[in-house]
Length: 135
Image 1 (cartoon, rainbow, N blue to C red):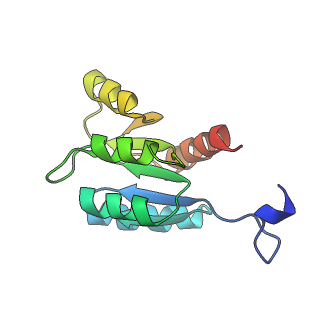
Image 2: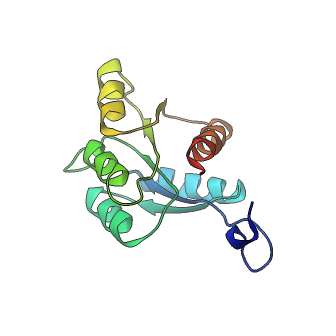
């Protein structure tokens, strides 16, 4: 990693992840577990919070549910994938049907995982996804 990509202590910066889900306990738990795995993870609990964060903050990756109050997570995926710096998206859903999986991929999602997802599996998928997009 180039020296310019390191923080003041010579360490690589932690990847910033946005986790979008209306289940606050799930967001809280995964945020803590992903922090222990070396990521900087922030939560959003609905469509509007997610869009605001996408538009005002820089993230390296987003994880989202598709079943959110008032609006589908598909719109959030499209927004995350558009713009000057599209970010990769992982879907974590409790309803991973072939049609839903296809719709998520059509919107730009990299991977669809069925809840509950172990932190080991999620960490592996995050690292693989970030590696594919590192350039």
